[in-house]
Image (cartoon, rainbow, N blue to C red; front, side, top):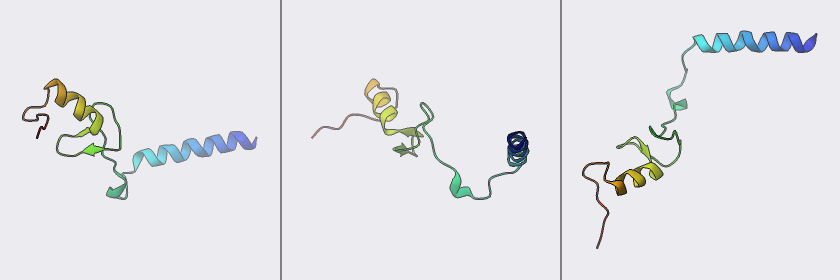
Length: 69
């Protein structure tokens, strides 16, 4: 009986949370547009470092070249 009540309470809370908007903007996490990785994010390109490197080496990102000195 208690488990059924807990499940019902959790469902009710989930519905209430779905209706609300986030209270704090700092909870937003930037993610890679290709793979969804949250870390190593390059905001200029909206990609993670791994996808950025892969696409840059393939020549898919215009204006980006491998450095040499």
